[in-house]
Amino acid sequence: MSEKILDDYSKWMVDDKMPAGKQKVLLAAIKLFAKYGYDGTSTASIAQESGMSEATIFKYFKTKRLLLDAVLDPLINQLIPMYADNFINHQLPLNGSFAQTINEAIRNRLAFVYTNRHILKILVSELMVNDVLLGQLKTKLAPIVDNMLNIAEQLGAHSDLDTIDILRLMTGQLVFEFIRMTRLAPTEAYDINTTADKIAQSVLRSLSD
Image 1 (cartoon, rainbow, N blue to C red):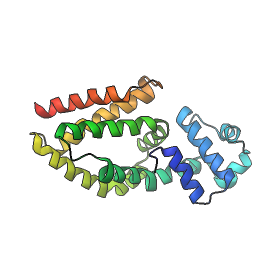
Image 2 (image 1 turned 90 degrees about the vertical axis):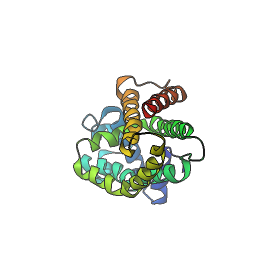
Image 3 (image 1 turned 60 degrees about the vertical axis):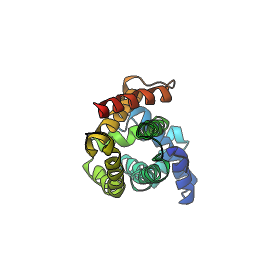
Image 4 (image 1 turned 180 degrees about the vertical axis):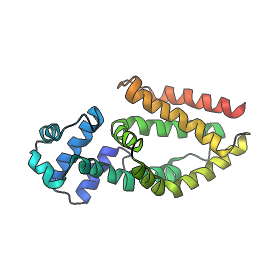
């Protein structure tokens, strides 16, 4: 597992024995939906990007909406839950100091968000308006979130803040950075380490107040 969504997405399509033409359509749709948004992307542009005809697109996906659903389904039902579980159970550093745990957790997730910002932009945009999709993701992540809350509760022993406060501080900063890197100041020259250090310092100051 690479934690690069497009790489793992491509592997999933191969493992699923998906026809090559369908794979090309999905990858082209991901690229264009991320760049122009769902409404700003036509099936004609997807056909041009993929090298497939519009007839081929509609052979696999009856509507553009169903194409978007096909893009999002493996993210919601397989990849995002897999990444979250892997982070909680295998990547989250719990053997160091409290400050080290906070710092490394933020650095790890910030790197994940930055690496996958384009495809996450598609997912987040749809979650904002699609309650059904949001419900599916909540259901998939529920046991992982429970585990995360238990860990955050252990971390909370170091401060007067409760579990939700700790998660709110960390996720709020990460959400802002996601908006900054995708909307406010999109750039390839993003300093993950410096930004992670600043976020961690801010979180730790709040926890110590």
